[in-house]
Length: 92
Image (cartoon, rainbow, N blue to C red):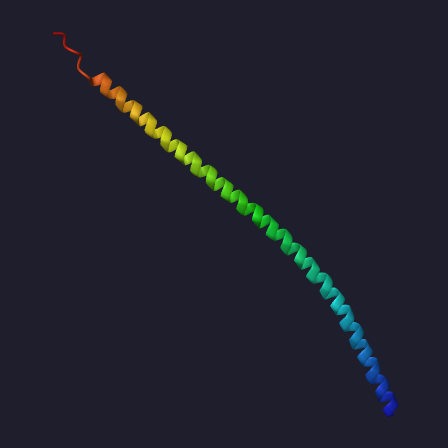
């Protein structure tokens, strides 16, 4: 009876070892896949951040150009208004 008990224990240990080996293999594959997904996500995020930075710089430059154009138009308008309102030169 003791021998049968030892056989059962040995068989259970082998089954446990086999299942753990299988589990390790599946976990290894899963972790490798997670790493691939993480790398891809990080690359996409880097690209998105670079694009956001580029767009922010373009927006800043466009805003500065609009501001400069507005100042130029305002200055030209004031100059035109002052020359239009000036009294004619008097002859002596």
